[in-house]
Image (spheres, rainbow, N blue to C red):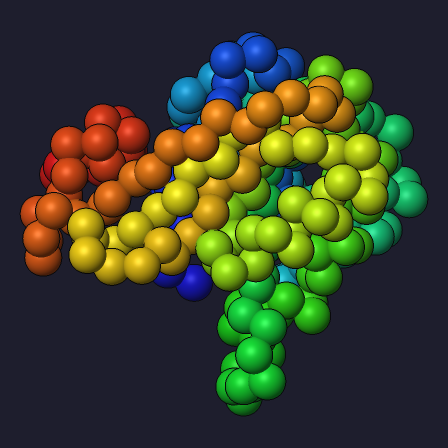
Length: 219
């Protein structure tokens, strides 16, 4: 699976201001978000989980060949099994979840798992996060903008409240495409910002460059 803009955005945006010592990446794919957080933070424990076998093998290979291999570990398991078996709780949890809720399916099962919401329903995801997150921890996620209200309402049920929200647009004239959301168990007024990726075709905005330039060879 190729590295997508969503993963890069989340890996670059997720706050580490609270100096997380432990991080969990749910549905890590090839491990890009975990690797970015290893580069950005000094967290001693960075766990990732991935249910697809091929993606898991690629992730393990990427972790082993990275400069941070001693801090990265990937579990080949489902989120449900992980919650039942793990005793650790985390300072930071990140997830770029499957969220295509339309009825369309392809014949490629790994792609379906990665792309469709029914592989990881939002309610199940948030419920599990509420059990794995430390009291002072943060949970960061990227979802379609159209799903934002539903996602926040579901998070409320589990005592998680938005603390930062960033809306992402492809160009100045396009509609909001993605929502980057950060949650905690603390109530408060969420800080809201906006990011435009391109000023025009193939011309990245300065704000996007500032956010992601540490992770591109040519930016």
